[in-house]
Image (cartoon, rainbow, N blue to C red; front, side):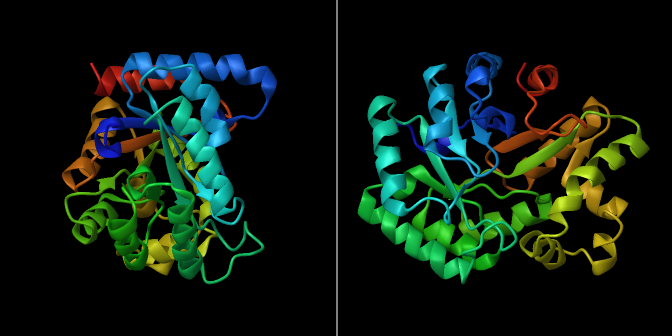
Amino acid sequence: MSTPVKEAVGRYGIWSVGLRSEDPDRRGELAEAAAELEELGFGAVWLGGSSSAAHAVPLIEATSTLTVGTSIQSIWQHEPDASGAAFAELESAHPGRFVLGLGVSHARLAEQYRRPYSALVSYLDGLDAAGVPADRRVLAALGPKSLRLTRDRAAGTIPYLVTPEHTAHAREVLGEGPLLAPELAVVPETDPVRARALAREFLEFYLSLPNYTNNFLRHGFTEEDLKDGGSDRLVDALFAWGDETAVRARIDAFFEAGADHVALQVIDGEPRDALPRKTWRDLAALLLD
Protein backbone atom coordinates (compact mmCIF):
# COMPACT_ATOMS: atom_id res chain seq x y z
CA MET A 1 0.00 0.00 0.00
CA SER A 2 1.50 3.34 -1.08
CA THR A 3 1.92 6.34 1.21
CA PRO A 4 -1.00 8.78 0.99
CA VAL A 5 -0.26 11.70 -1.33
CA LYS A 6 -0.58 14.23 1.48
CA GLU A 7 2.23 12.52 3.38
CA ALA A 8 4.33 11.60 0.35
CA VAL A 9 4.81 15.14 -0.95
CA GLY A 10 6.08 16.53 2.35
CA ARG A 11 5.99 20.19 3.22
CA TYR A 12 7.96 21.68 0.32
CA GLY A 13 8.18 20.97 -3.38
CA ILE A 14 9.64 22.48 -6.54
CA TRP A 15 7.47 23.56 -9.47
CA SER A 16 9.37 23.62 -12.76
CA VAL A 17 8.79 23.77 -16.49
CA GLY A 18 12.44 22.86 -17.15
CA LEU A 19 12.17 19.50 -15.42
CA ARG A 20 9.61 18.35 -18.02
CA SER A 21 11.96 18.88 -20.97
CA GLU A 22 11.58 16.45 -23.87
CA ASP A 23 15.07 17.17 -25.22
CA PRO A 24 16.96 13.84 -25.10
CA ASP A 25 20.23 15.72 -24.73
CA ARG A 26 19.00 17.07 -21.38
CA ARG A 27 17.97 13.72 -19.91
CA GLY A 28 21.15 13.40 -17.84
CA GLU A 29 20.85 16.99 -16.61
CA LEU A 30 17.25 16.44 -15.52
CA ALA A 31 18.10 13.21 -13.74
CA GLU A 32 20.98 14.88 -11.89
CA ALA A 33 18.79 17.84 -10.89
CA ALA A 34 16.01 15.57 -9.62
CA ALA A 35 18.46 13.51 -7.60
CA GLU A 36 19.84 16.68 -6.03
CA LEU A 37 16.35 17.95 -5.15
CA GLU A 38 15.64 14.66 -3.40
CA GLU A 39 18.96 14.87 -1.55
CA LEU A 40 18.23 18.46 -0.52
CA GLY A 41 15.04 17.27 1.15
CA PHE A 42 12.25 18.41 -1.16
CA GLY A 43 9.36 15.96 -1.08
CA ALA A 44 7.99 16.52 -4.56
CA VAL A 45 8.55 18.08 -7.94
CA TRP A 46 5.64 19.38 -9.99
CA LEU A 47 6.10 19.42 -13.75
CA GLY A 48 4.83 22.64 -15.27
CA GLY A 49 3.34 23.17 -18.66
CA SER A 50 1.02 20.54 -20.09
CA SER A 51 2.88 17.57 -18.67
CA SER A 52 2.06 13.88 -18.53
CA ALA A 53 3.23 10.64 -16.96
CA ALA A 54 5.85 10.29 -19.69
CA HIS A 55 7.59 13.45 -18.45
CA ALA A 56 7.74 12.05 -14.93
CA VAL A 57 9.48 8.79 -15.89
CA PRO A 58 13.10 9.99 -16.12
CA LEU A 59 12.84 11.88 -12.82
CA ILE A 60 11.30 8.94 -10.99
CA GLU A 61 13.91 6.57 -12.41
CA ALA A 62 16.69 8.88 -11.19
CA THR A 63 15.40 9.05 -7.61
CA SER A 64 14.17 6.69 -4.91
CA THR A 65 11.62 8.60 -2.81
CA LEU A 66 10.76 11.82 -4.66
CA THR A 67 7.10 12.23 -5.62
CA VAL A 68 6.59 13.54 -9.15
CA GLY A 69 3.33 15.17 -10.18
CA THR A 70 1.96 16.83 -13.29
CA SER A 71 0.96 20.47 -12.89
CA ILE A 72 -0.91 20.13 -14.98
CA GLN A 73 -1.97 17.51 -17.47
CA SER A 74 -4.58 19.20 -19.66
CA ILE A 75 -7.78 17.21 -19.92
CA TRP A 76 -8.06 18.31 -23.53
CA GLN A 77 -4.78 16.72 -24.64
CA HIS A 78 -5.00 13.18 -23.25
CA GLU A 79 -7.96 10.80 -23.32
CA PRO A 80 -8.87 9.26 -19.94
CA ASP A 81 -8.16 5.70 -21.08
CA ALA A 82 -4.69 6.68 -22.31
CA SER A 83 -4.05 8.52 -19.03
CA GLY A 84 -5.17 5.43 -17.16
CA ALA A 85 -2.83 3.17 -19.12
CA ALA A 86 0.13 5.49 -18.58
CA PHE A 87 -0.66 5.74 -14.87
CA ALA A 88 -0.92 1.95 -14.53
CA GLU A 89 2.40 1.38 -16.28
CA LEU A 90 4.23 3.89 -14.09
CA GLU A 91 2.50 2.66 -10.95
CA SER A 92 3.52 -0.91 -11.73
CA ALA A 93 7.16 0.04 -12.18
CA HIS A 94 7.37 2.59 -9.34
CA PRO A 95 4.45 2.21 -6.92
CA GLY A 96 3.30 5.38 -5.19
CA ARG A 97 5.77 7.73 -6.86
CA PHE A 98 3.53 9.50 -9.40
CA VAL A 99 0.59 11.84 -8.85
CA LEU A 100 -1.68 12.75 -11.74
CA GLY A 101 -2.36 16.49 -11.54
CA LEU A 102 -5.21 17.54 -13.84
CA GLY A 103 -6.70 20.79 -15.01
CA VAL A 104 -8.98 22.32 -17.61
CA SER A 105 -6.29 24.68 -18.95
CA HIS A 106 -7.63 27.83 -20.67
CA ALA A 107 -9.75 28.74 -23.67
CA ARG A 108 -6.80 30.57 -25.18
CA LEU A 109 -4.68 27.39 -25.05
CA ALA A 110 -7.19 24.67 -25.93
CA GLU A 111 -9.33 24.77 -29.08
CA GLN A 112 -11.77 22.25 -27.63
CA TYR A 113 -12.39 24.33 -24.50
CA ARG A 114 -16.14 24.07 -23.83
CA ARG A 115 -18.07 23.79 -20.55
CA PRO A 116 -14.85 23.10 -18.63
CA TYR A 117 -16.44 22.02 -15.36
CA SER A 118 -18.67 19.44 -17.04
CA ALA A 119 -15.72 18.26 -19.12
CA LEU A 120 -13.63 17.78 -15.97
CA VAL A 121 -16.40 15.78 -14.30
CA SER A 122 -16.65 13.55 -17.37
CA TYR A 123 -12.88 13.15 -17.42
CA LEU A 124 -12.89 11.99 -13.81
CA ASP A 125 -15.61 9.48 -14.71
CA GLY A 126 -13.31 8.21 -17.45
CA LEU A 127 -10.38 7.93 -15.04
CA ASP A 128 -12.57 5.97 -12.64
CA ALA A 129 -13.38 3.55 -15.44
CA ALA A 130 -9.69 3.38 -16.40
CA GLY A 131 -8.67 2.45 -12.87
CA VAL A 132 -6.94 5.64 -11.72
CA PRO A 133 -7.85 5.89 -8.02
CA ALA A 134 -9.18 9.17 -6.68
CA ASP A 135 -6.50 9.21 -4.00
CA ARG A 136 -3.74 9.42 -6.61
CA ARG A 137 -5.04 12.38 -8.61
CA VAL A 138 -5.18 16.08 -7.75
CA LEU A 139 -6.97 18.96 -9.43
CA ALA A 140 -5.89 22.48 -10.29
CA ALA A 141 -8.94 24.03 -8.64
CA LEU A 142 -9.51 27.78 -8.29
CA GLY A 143 -13.25 28.41 -8.00
CA PRO A 144 -15.73 27.05 -5.45
CA LYS A 145 -17.29 24.41 -7.76
CA SER A 146 -13.90 22.97 -8.68
CA LEU A 147 -12.82 22.96 -5.04
CA ARG A 148 -15.95 21.03 -4.07
CA LEU A 149 -15.24 18.58 -6.88
CA THR A 150 -11.71 18.18 -5.52
CA ARG A 151 -13.09 17.45 -2.06
CA ASP A 152 -15.37 14.75 -3.43
CA ARG A 153 -13.32 13.11 -6.17
CA ALA A 154 -9.59 13.71 -5.73
CA ALA A 155 -6.78 13.56 -3.19
CA GLY A 156 -6.42 17.33 -3.16
CA THR A 157 -5.73 20.46 -5.13
CA ILE A 158 -2.69 22.16 -6.66
CA PRO A 159 -3.88 25.74 -7.28
CA TYR A 160 -1.57 27.97 -9.30
CA LEU A 161 -0.96 31.72 -8.95
CA VAL A 162 -2.97 32.19 -5.76
CA THR A 163 -2.73 34.11 -2.50
CA PRO A 164 -2.92 33.04 1.14
CA GLU A 165 -6.48 34.37 1.13
CA HIS A 166 -7.39 31.90 -1.61
CA THR A 167 -5.66 29.17 0.38
CA ALA A 168 -7.77 29.96 3.45
CA HIS A 169 -10.94 29.84 1.33
CA ALA A 170 -9.85 26.58 -0.29
CA ARG A 171 -9.21 24.97 3.08
CA GLU A 172 -12.66 26.01 4.26
CA VAL A 173 -14.26 24.36 1.22
CA LEU A 174 -12.08 21.24 1.28
CA GLY A 175 -12.14 20.52 4.98
CA GLU A 176 -9.11 19.09 6.74
CA GLY A 177 -8.58 15.89 4.78
CA PRO A 178 -7.57 16.72 1.19
CA LEU A 179 -4.11 17.91 0.18
CA LEU A 180 -3.89 21.67 -0.35
CA ALA A 181 -0.67 22.40 -2.24
CA PRO A 182 -0.53 25.88 -3.80
CA GLU A 183 2.22 26.94 -6.16
CA LEU A 184 4.16 30.05 -5.11
CA ALA A 185 6.57 31.98 -7.33
CA VAL A 186 9.81 33.08 -5.64
CA VAL A 187 11.77 36.01 -7.06
CA PRO A 188 15.32 35.88 -5.62
CA GLU A 189 15.77 39.65 -5.65
CA THR A 190 15.89 42.17 -2.81
CA ASP A 191 15.57 45.35 -4.86
CA PRO A 192 11.83 46.20 -5.01
CA VAL A 193 11.97 47.73 -8.48
CA ARG A 194 13.85 44.80 -9.99
CA ALA A 195 11.79 42.18 -8.12
CA ARG A 196 8.47 43.64 -9.20
CA ALA A 197 9.69 44.08 -12.78
CA LEU A 198 10.59 40.39 -12.97
CA ALA A 199 7.25 39.47 -11.44
CA ARG A 200 5.29 41.64 -13.89
CA GLU A 201 7.19 40.23 -16.86
CA PHE A 202 6.14 36.77 -15.72
CA LEU A 203 2.59 37.81 -14.82
CA GLU A 204 1.80 39.48 -18.15
CA PHE A 205 0.67 36.29 -19.88
CA TYR A 206 -1.51 35.17 -16.98
CA LEU A 207 -3.34 38.49 -16.83
CA SER A 208 -4.74 37.61 -20.26
CA LEU A 209 -6.40 34.45 -18.92
CA PRO A 210 -9.89 34.90 -17.40
CA ASN A 211 -9.60 31.85 -15.13
CA TYR A 212 -6.89 33.68 -13.19
CA THR A 213 -8.20 37.22 -13.39
CA ASN A 214 -11.67 36.13 -12.29
CA ASN A 215 -10.09 34.38 -9.33
CA PHE A 216 -8.22 37.54 -8.35
CA LEU A 217 -11.46 39.50 -8.49
CA ARG A 218 -13.19 36.90 -6.32
CA HIS A 219 -10.55 37.39 -3.64
CA GLY A 220 -10.50 41.11 -3.09
CA PHE A 221 -8.64 42.59 -6.03
CA THR A 222 -10.15 45.10 -8.43
CA GLU A 223 -9.95 45.79 -12.15
CA GLU A 224 -7.44 48.52 -11.29
CA ASP A 225 -5.15 45.91 -9.74
CA LEU A 226 -5.09 44.05 -13.07
CA LYS A 227 -3.91 47.00 -15.17
CA ASP A 228 -0.37 47.84 -16.30
CA GLY A 229 1.10 44.46 -15.45
CA GLY A 230 -0.52 44.29 -12.04
CA SER A 231 -0.55 46.66 -9.08
CA ASP A 232 2.11 46.46 -6.37
CA ARG A 233 -0.61 45.03 -4.14
CA LEU A 234 -1.32 42.20 -6.57
CA VAL A 235 2.34 41.47 -7.27
CA ASP A 236 3.27 41.42 -3.60
CA ALA A 237 0.39 39.06 -2.84
CA LEU A 238 1.32 36.58 -5.59
CA PHE A 239 5.11 36.51 -5.35
CA ALA A 240 7.66 35.93 -2.60
CA TRP A 241 10.55 38.35 -2.98
CA GLY A 242 13.03 40.20 -0.80
CA ASP A 243 15.59 38.95 1.68
CA GLU A 244 15.48 35.51 3.30
CA THR A 245 13.26 36.72 6.12
CA ALA A 246 10.71 38.20 3.72
CA VAL A 247 10.66 35.12 1.48
CA ARG A 248 10.27 32.80 4.47
CA ALA A 249 7.44 34.93 5.85
CA ARG A 250 5.59 34.84 2.54
CA ILE A 251 5.90 31.07 2.32
CA ASP A 252 4.81 30.67 5.93
CA ALA A 253 1.72 32.78 5.23
CA PHE A 254 0.40 29.97 3.01
CA PHE A 255 0.88 27.39 5.75
CA GLU A 256 -0.79 29.67 8.26
CA ALA A 257 -3.73 29.93 5.85
CA GLY A 258 -4.11 26.16 5.71
CA ALA A 259 -1.70 24.81 3.07
CA ASP A 260 -0.18 21.37 3.62
CA HIS A 261 2.54 21.79 0.99
CA VAL A 262 3.89 24.69 -1.06
CA ALA A 263 5.35 24.17 -4.55
CA LEU A 264 8.03 26.80 -5.17
CA GLN A 265 8.66 28.16 -8.66
CA VAL A 266 11.76 30.30 -9.18
CA ILE A 267 11.34 33.43 -11.31
CA ASP A 268 14.74 35.00 -11.99
CA GLY A 269 14.57 36.37 -15.53
CA GLU A 270 16.15 33.27 -17.05
CA PRO A 271 14.30 31.18 -19.67
CA ARG A 272 11.47 29.22 -18.10
CA ASP A 273 13.01 25.90 -19.10
CA ALA A 274 16.21 26.67 -17.18
CA LEU A 275 17.03 24.78 -14.00
CA PRO A 276 17.80 27.36 -11.26
CA ARG A 277 19.72 24.90 -9.15
CA LYS A 278 21.60 27.49 -7.08
CA THR A 279 18.34 29.09 -5.98
CA TRP A 280 16.88 25.66 -5.26
CA ARG A 281 19.86 25.03 -2.98
CA ASP A 282 19.36 28.41 -1.33
CA LEU A 283 15.69 27.62 -0.70
CA ALA A 284 16.61 24.24 0.76
CA ALA A 285 19.07 25.92 3.11
CA LEU A 286 16.39 28.40 4.15
CA LEU A 287 13.54 25.92 4.59
CA LEU A 288 14.91 22.44 5.09
CA ASP A 289 17.99 22.73 7.30
